[in-house]
Length: 147
Image (cartoon, rainbow, N blue to C red; front, side, top):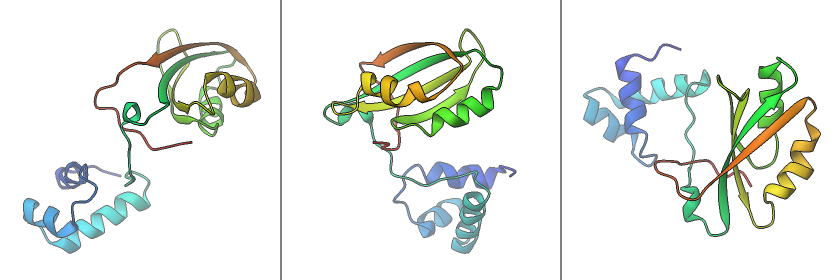
């Protein structure tokens, strides 16, 4: 999928997920049908998702944690995909540096770090080590609700 300037402008307007296609079309001086067809194409090709996102620190009894993962294998993509399906996982990325993967977790009182590591992460083989960073505050972080 090529992200031309029109696609990028449409996506910028969609940051307000309740903005109508007609409002976007008017702001960009294009037709509503153009907006609709481009959004549908972006969604169909997997380049765009429209979802409700939450500010995690605003939800009572929920935390966000970042976890660095070191693996015994170099099959990073496969392990990243495996981990991304675990309960509480918002996102997994293959990264450079001292970790192989970085995860973002959303957890709560009923399903916290202990439950995540013992019930979920223990299913993943070839994990050498993890390091957990609990976020006390976040800025501009919006995530899908995963629990």
